Length: 244
Image (cartoon, rainbow, N blue to C red; front, side, top):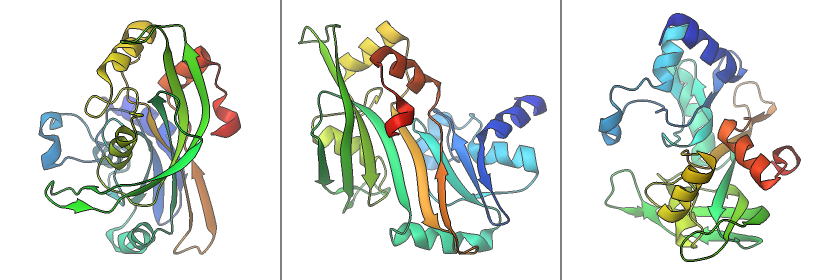
């Protein structure tokens, strides 16, 4: 990626910045940083690498998003600032709001309390997710074994931050996310690919709300939906600005 492309990308990715932190909109299919769990993506440019190329300094992500998940990532500008923000995440003082598109008509609201495996992939850890169904649609497009296809737009509020938590939890209640290659429904994923030419995962980190640990002021940082979300909202006649 050339310098001009990187600068243009970063210009549209910065959501908020102060002396302590920067909030960045991560696109789909981009790693936050390299890890042993993403060996197949070792050559792809990461979010922290793009930030380094643009600003000439290291940034320190204080939480993670899956490669396929889009949305807001909070990065400290100096290592010494990390612990104060991470304490907010650990003590659940940051409200994280996600949106997803799932298979079927999900319940009006609910709570999923089901342990998931930690990053060491051996120990199950407590995980809690609250959800609300924003709207639903039934499309006249057959998906095996039915003659039509049903989908829900859901708002997700995780109380914990386990790896793949939202993807696992939605699969657990039989409403997997569309575009999820691991926990999703391959027939519905294929329909979205064939009918709409959409291959991305429908999971978006839409906002973070917290009291800034250094500035001592309430913060609400929103993150706009990426292009494939607007494409499907037009197909389904969903207004993302009203409820999201």
